[in-house]
Image 1 (tube, rainbow, N blue to C red):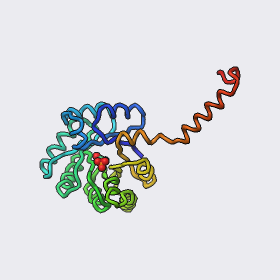
Image 2: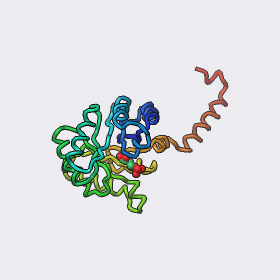
Image 3: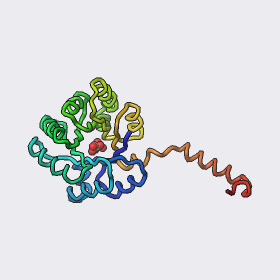
Image 4: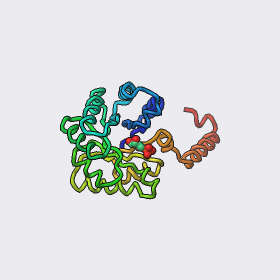
Length: 219
Ligand code: E4P
């Protein structure tokens, strides 16, 4: 499963890039607002740091303006993925982007049937939001399992990008469900490696190692 970072924070992106685990970036208007940066300059800079796919979201509501914005964004760098909301107008725009060879990430997906529509218009990625569903007591991860089944039933190539992740369990369950990608905030990305048993085990090995006479452990 690929790991994307869900952020527009350049320092976080550089830090994650150094781990060797980062496959791409997803941004959204909220992340861009938080950065305080010019949107276009920011997208260019992220695309220079990360060679993998970088999602940049259109903000128009109508198809024609979505197409203008998306074409402009796609021209910024070869790794830009145009992020489009899952609305009727958005799906019409995705259909055109697909025909033009522009990669798309259909966002704000909250049901498997919505994901089916995105696949039918050729979306590159579908972003089902698991955390926001969990927040209202609907199991978000069941949606990932159902979308996997639907896409496999019909051989759709659209990649499932599990979004709105909040915990290591979301990442683990997404991988078990066969999600192609999970995007996550930096705080969660950093937590994935942690396990107290690893820390305890390491301390024990270190203690025992130091019991060995130095001549027997120097190499
Ligand atoms: C995905 O592309 C979205 O930007 C993101 O995952 C939303 O997450 P949130 O529900 O934590 O805002």
